Image (cartoon, rainbow, N blue to C red):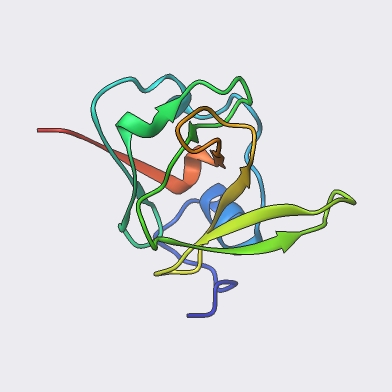
Length: 125
């Protein structure tokens, strides 16, 4: 799939982040305050990416998780800010979700800093 193609099923902001590797403004996602049990899915293709049990408040302004589900992301190095960062994309649709850092909590020490517009929360039924 060519990740750069506009998707008419997505909002302009979702297209900007998923297809053009953009970033939503910090603190803008209602998912920052989501505390219910459930799972987080890619808005582009629906694949499950994170469980709510791995979400935590990082203070970054974006929904953050210390662990993703296995084999759901591909990573690449991003140097847009002048230094290397690890960017991650959905393996199924190629959509850009955010960056992963090594400053998260135990047990993984990871912080998946995800753009909220890229996620769909599905409460546990």
